[in-house]
Length: 182
Image (tube, rainbow, N blue to C red; front, side, top):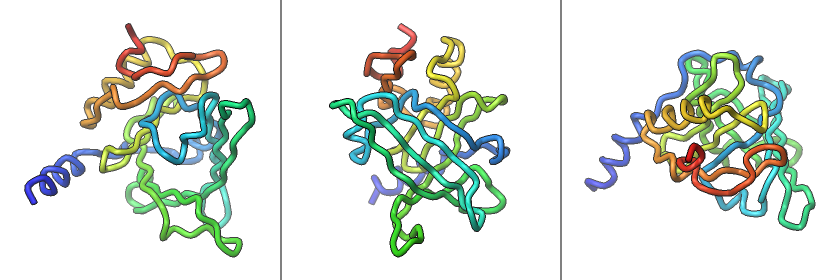
């Protein structure tokens, strides 16, 4: 019981950004690092996500990555706002049945840090079991990386749980994000 209360208290500390312009957020993002997940196990490099305005106020998602054998993996999904007063809190689903995306199988997608010019973002979840560092470009300056690591830590995450996603023309070695500046 105590472990559950501690977990709930920690989860309450994760906060989405207060302001986000979802129109500016749309477009293509490169995955710089992530907390490894089973559903991305086939992805070894060049992972990116593209967000587009969709029908019925949904956001269309296309995630693409390169597998170990050089082939591309692609998955499509949808996102929607969880709370109209908190636009940085979204939920995402990749479950499509009978031509419609079903949100009863979805995950929280909270933008928890965002560059003022929308050049990088950190996406998290209140449980801290999920996290992604996204950027518009494959390369980030050491100043930007230091700020991202600081923002991750300020949300109660361990920056060493995030693993760099190799990108052609960007960071190329899979290692903990906390070691990126060494």
